[in-house]
Length: 174
Image (cartoon, rainbow, N blue to C red):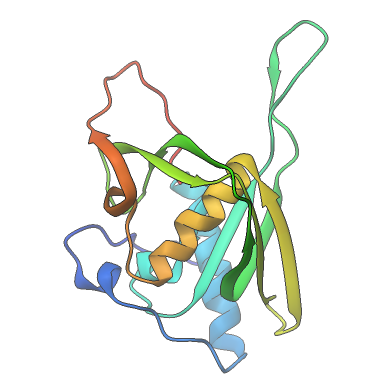
């Protein structure tokens, strides 16, 4: 596996609609593995192929819900890895919620974005088999953020406000 360079604005690949993936071969598997490594080392919770300069419809997401232990301390929950090829949102909740997002391709900024609180996504797994994911909360937000990348949409396009966070603000990078 190889860590890939994360593309940042104003690179035009981030504004292009990505092509559907039709061929499942060794090169695709290498790209998937490289994207997982790149996302983890960044660190991030999601990465879309355009963010590594590849204009194809592929996202990787790795996220786990934190919980509180009996002492009230935050414990990191187990993470689940998702690889989705040609993903599309097929169902959304009526409810939306505001949340703060960052992006590995837009360093040093965060924004407040309204997203659906629950979604259902369909696509293909890394072996080309159909798969569906039901997501809510932050996981739903991550999927929406990454799928936007595949359409050339970046979170500031949807944000109600964008700002440079202060040193004491800690926000997850999507």
